[in-house]
Amino acid sequence: MPSARTSGPTLFIIGGAEDRMGRASLLRRFVKLSGGRRSRLVVVPTASSFQDEVVDAYTQVFTRLGAAAPGVVNPTSRQDAHDPALVALIDQATGVFFSGGSQLKLSQYFPGTPVGDAVHRAHARGAVIGGTSAGASIMSDFMISLGGEGTTALQRTSQISAGLGLISGVVVDQHFGQRARYGRLMSVLAVSPNLIGVGIDEDTAIEVVDGAEFTVHGRGAVFVLDCRAARTDA
Image 1 (tube, helix red, strand yellow):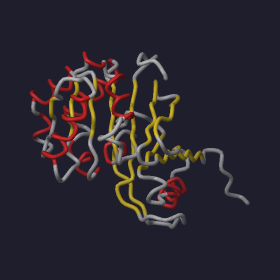
Image 2 (spheres, one colour; image 1 turned 90 degrees about the vertical axis):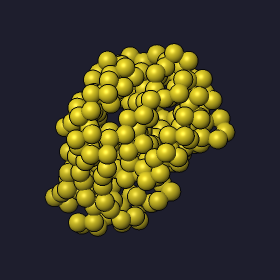
Image 3 (tube, helix red, strand yellow; image 1 turned 30 degrees about the vertical axis):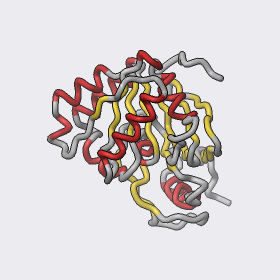
Image 4 (cartoon, helix red, strand yellow; image 1 turned 120 degrees about the vertical axis):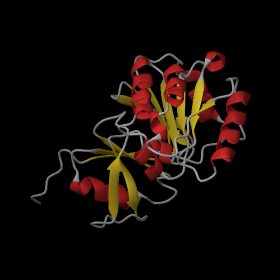
């Protein structure tokens, strides 16, 4: 088991559908990285259509794993994302966790706002930034906000939107093997081959340290697609 101490700013990016009822090994790792019983967690349910239920579910699992009840940061507009009280919660957190749902809500309310800036500050000072499903996609500079499923890459079938930019030069996709999202990830990289594509299976996470290397945790696999040296003259 890796140590809870890391050598630099850490992201904990989950591909969705993580176990919350059993051992909850991924969320257990997130709590441990965030300080365990001394952690100060914040849950961001903004992406979800069932926000109260999401807060209740993560409060139950995080407290079962030894953490105190998390704070909640849930802006519902860009104006809300200027609220000093929400900024203060993130500024005090040792771990921030973004739930699943619609990543477009996250891209509308977080990048370029005070709460988004607070997430960057938290990451820089060593708080662990975690997320699942939509909360995984928002981590990178650009995220896939629309796209079909399947193994074939088709032109103009995927759309990208601004992410938080906590990890550069990467685009993250989630529910990867379970929803056969190979094609949509490849279609994005076909027109932006400078990006590295990372597809994460369900109940699987990557623990990214210093934006330079990652360790895989969980039951599934992680697919990495690097087209930076691809040739187009064949």
